[in-house]
Image (cartoon, rainbow, N blue to C red; front, side):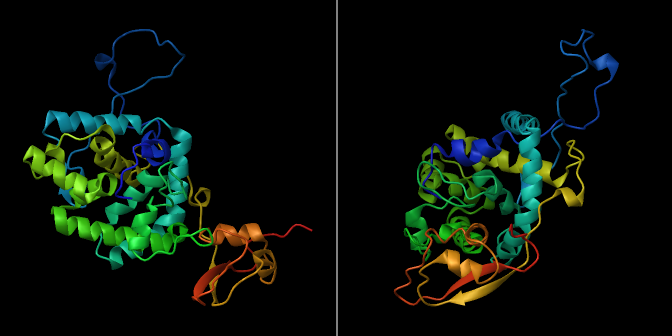
Amino acid sequence: MHQIKNILAIVGLVTVSGLFIYAAQESPSDNEVTKEKPLVNDYNVYALEVPEGLNFAGEVMPLENPDIYERMDRELLVNTYWQSNGLLMFKRAAKYFPIIEPILKKNGIPEDFKYLSVIESGLTNAVSPAGARGFWQIMKATGREEGLEINDNVDERYHLEMATEVACQYLKDAKEQLGSWTLAAAAYNAGKAGISRRLKEQNVNDYYDLLLNEETGRYMFRIVALKEILAHPQKYGFNFRDKDLYANVPTFKVEVDTAVTDFTRFAEEFGINYKILKLHNPWLREPHLNNKSRKKYLIEIPEKGHYTARP
């Protein structure tokens, strides 16, 4: 998580960095457009207007600074032309934001941090080459420090609710140490020590005054661009119906405090197969559960009628 994965761009940031669509903002007038014959039929590309008052967690982005304006403009443009992936983000957000949002609220974390999870993983259980895993891209050491069980048998970094709780604790600590939610978000990418060191070295106290590496330097602009686009789909050209979005399958929880020797048979007892069991419990990493300590686990089982069994 806070140990930065230089290659994270390959997994999380690049996954999302080019996210979005053909913008549906007002086209320039004929007088504003150079009179040249289009190279490809009627396809045109228009500049976007950077909205005023963009902010993260209520902390305003200083767009009056030309450097900040250009960097924000870049991310809005970059995140405007990957239509298929953009639609996937809307679909997944409809499924997973309702799980993430109440956990953020309970922990006093601004709702804008849900977009950080999109930047980190594209709302998938991504695995980075550096070893970060899950929606929140938590490193093994960090997860264990925060009480997650992580081994070959069980890896709770893949448990969305538990991982979100860990992310919240990290962000609260970072906010207390660094003084702003923007810096706390940047620390999620570059580490609390890393951001603190850069602030001291450069004698500034604001993210937007820092000179940072490419990944961390773009991090907040990507998040704010994502927030702007996901919050205003039609403004940026997305058209979809509620039925086009993904939804969670209702589940109930089964408590297990013993070993499970065969999850295929376990799943069949509830009218599902092993694949469906793993879809709802990705934190179970092997087809059995050792559980020598008799720990209590809650395994999610989908309610009947949502998956059709093949004969």
